[in-house]
Amino acid sequence: DVREHRLLHEAVKDRNIDLVKYMIQLDPSCLYHSDEIYESFPIGETFLNASDTSNTNGEVGDEEKVHDETNEEKKISDEEKVLCLEIAKCLIKEAISHDPFHPSIGGLFSETEAGDLVFHLMIKRYGEKSTWACIQGALAPFEDIPILHQVIKHAPDYCS
Image (cartoon, rainbow, N blue to C red; front, side):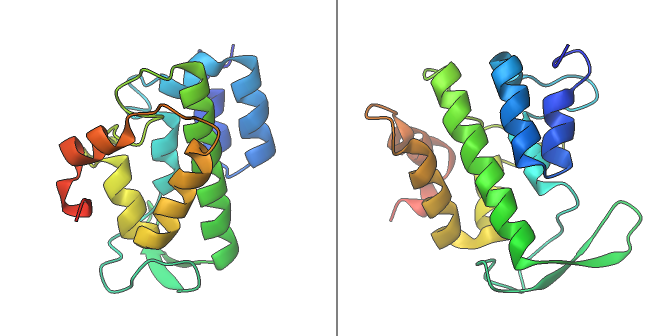
């Protein structure tokens, strides 16, 4: 069972987009599932091992150091950033397809285990331009998603 064994979370954590798509196909309800192990929706896993990136603009093309759970430094490559954004785009699109009326708009306005809004983390880690491109790509097939209302409610700093 995809939900019982947290297989979608694990596929996202492992950065395996093909497995992510497969797990969504098996059980799309997992897109909005959190539990005592993973206290955030699967989209929160796209930021696993992320650290403060305030010294960079976060756009794809910048290399930055992050700390993993053992505090060892590692570089996040441009390829990994692109892959993470592709996975986030897939998760948002599929979550909206599954439940277009969920207030988190595909998990964008959900919180991670640390209490951070996924939308804010995307902008912090990938920059506004890359984040909005990801969101636009995810939402392109939909005509009536009330994202502007959610942005104004949860992230008014990005509405100017």
